[in-house]
Every structure is written in structure tokens, then in C-alpha cells.
Length: 251
Image (cartoon, rainbow, N blue to C red; front, side, top):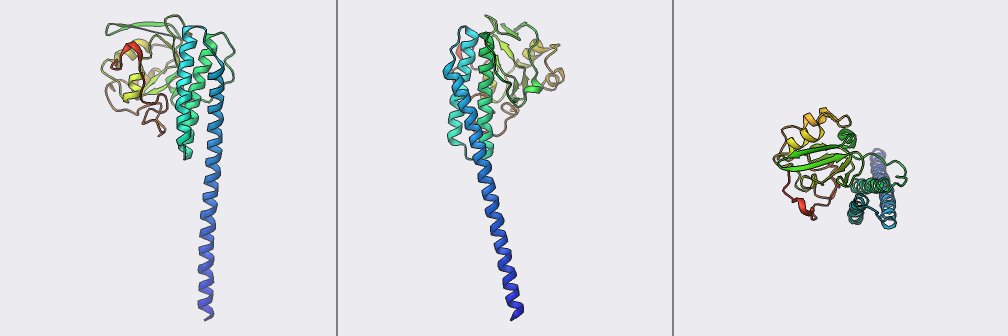
């Protein structure tokens, strides 16, 4: 009888220990989620404050602020759906992206760009535009420069788009947008990259060489896609939108 009672006590103690561990784990997960939600909300609010208070005074700053506003809208939508830590991180990264566009707009207007921001996925690998370039690709003239110009008024914060590194800089057209949405580059993209970035000091030549021969493939669908809520674009764009007059089938 004593042995049976002891066995029962041990079993009850084991069950109680399991219940306690489960509750502790759930409480810790809930606390981490609340912290992640609060952090994501803070970055979204910071982005919103900048978007709502700034007005561009030239084409580069207006375009950069329009892109920042798009990221603010996307981050707000993601925030409403964020139920996991991973989703909260996606919201935060989207807000980071928007703030990079804000910094670009402030720079274009001759303002203090503000404090440095956390790096974006793939940004370090992509590098940056360090010299002015103008290239002919399939009958189109495309430009890039480290600073905004009348011609190069489209900013990109740098990152991996559909498996290829796109350096941070100012461009004449947002030619990377179709690949962000489709998750793949079209025929001719290898020529674009080899013409635009070959030998550029700020661009990782090894990274570009490693991307050769990848035209049209599925790749990773975004900026080192962290598995967010944008359908595979890594948060850079929300999978839709009108790309203006350069056409969604370009590259």
C-alpha cells in the first residue's frame, strides 16, 4: 500500500512539474511576443511620424517619400496580422525599409538624415553604388549614381531581389520592382547587372559573379526572404502596385 501511494505521489509530482513547465514556457512566449509587438509598433510609429511630417521639395525626395509611405501602409497592414514573433520581425524590417527611404529623402533635401538604422537582410552583401553609371541594355538607357540627380531619382536601400544583390543607390528607373513581385528575373537581367555594376568598387563583385546564369529562376523571392506575410517578397513591396511607364515585364 505504501509503495502504491509513493508511486502515485511521484506521478502527481511529475504531472505538476510538466504543467508548470508548460505554463512557464507559454508565459515566456507570450512575453516575448508582447515585446516583439511593442518593438514593431514603435518602429511603425516612428516611420509614420516621418512620413506625415515631411514634404519633398524635388523629384528624388518626393519619390523617396512616396516609397516610404508605401512601406508605412504595408507595415501597418502587417502589424494588424502579426500574431507571432517572426511576423513581428517582418513588420519591423518593413518599417526599417521605409525609414531608409526617409533617410534618402532627407539627404536629397539637404537635411540631417537622422540616426543610423539597423541593416536590412542582404544589404551588406549587395554593397552600394559608388560611381555614376549610364548603360545601354536592350535599347534602354539606365543610370545609377551614389547621390540623387535629376535623372536618377529612384532610391533603393540595397538588398537581395530574387536572388540577385541590388546595391544601395539612386537609379533612373525602379527596374527591380517586377522581380520583387514575380520572384524571378527575366531574360536580359544578367546583361543589366554585368553592365551596370561590373568593376564598381562598392559592389561585391563575387556576389554578382555568383548570381550569373540565374535569369528566370525562382530564387529566394525577396530580400533574403525571412518568411514574412507579403507572399515572398521579403517585405520590400506588397505584391502589387502600378510600376509606372516602364512596364511590369522589364527584365
